[in-house]
Image (cartoon, rainbow, N blue to C red; front, side):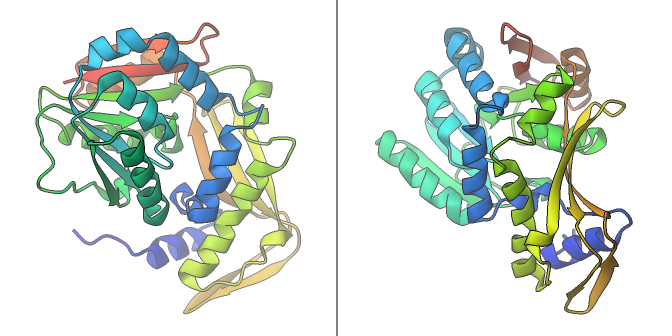
Length: 306
């Protein structure tokens, strides 16, 4: 199978009308650090809600998933959530997978320092193109871990494809532990993606710096403004970058004009009702699901098995 290069992928999205950039390109080293900062903002409820939820139901989650497994975290980032889970389930092996390979290497080293004797690996890769784990990683007893409601960044057909790929990573004795953000008040949702300090805006604009490096384009980052809003009909937050003037953007072999007010769509974050999501899990090959939610019903952690 031929996989598109980042240049082909990005220029195809930029050439569309409306233009788009995949959110996977947020995560260069600076973008990864900005996202860490976002997770500590008062408006950004998902990280702290999921963390509190896993602490509240720690014993039940540990009993459900079992101990001594091979833990495979997709989109591992700084591995902070893996630390929490490692304390609960004492894995025999940990594999972190992330598109930002340099950032991941440092995070996995920190995990080794925290858990002496843990066989911890870093695998750089784009999970949307399929994950290939090292041959010596045991296949039996795998637990795929995908926290943070990142599944919401994919439209429903692609989310279903990704869940089906997660099913392919495990045998019948394996499982999936996944976080999902649930629908809630629009004001709460929009504040989480457009914080008062402007960190999310900086994170969104940073994707243009990363794109400039990847494809040799000449985006003037400061001339684009952050837009985030809840699309009620699609049950998703949308993030865009909006041109503040008319621009001609060039890259080797191509380019296009952006008019003032024109937008580049950079991210969606779907908010699934729990029943809708468990139905999706079933279609992906997970026949059993158990969910834990916080007291406000804002977030859910779901354990699914074949």
